[in-house]
Length: 195
Image (cartoon, one colour):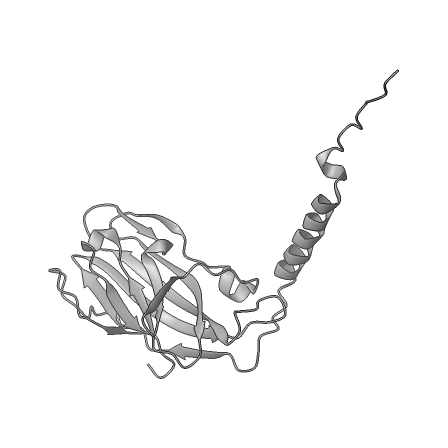
């Protein structure tokens, strides 16, 4: 008699790695809910007064470069960076070695006659000519509670949200915005600390 009976497989919830993932998820969730902010003392913000006047014509001409607070207006579709914050991280938010997080609070307004799409993938962080996405994830609620996602704006509607990237210190930083509605034109905004 040959006993080649196999052991039945464990259910998924009895595997050790499932419980490691559950505990890890709970630690992150508790940290996010607790609202503790262990921000580094060297976090800095650059804020400029909000300007309601457009810095470019609604006929489709765009400047080659903008500053924080300036409105780029292309055929009634408007974009502006309200504030830039540099965040060094905390025990849970750790940027790559030598980097820090760059958080851009942006507003997009649709003053056209048609519904227009917006998408956070239309934004890139350019550091010394290297463009990367603005899709970093941090646990600090101060920055993640209002992240910009994607959607559609009805005529006259606007949306404001945060974009999070990371870059090395002491680099030439620009936020690049290239929505499809702008006929593949790219708006560049200088977001250096001295801007």
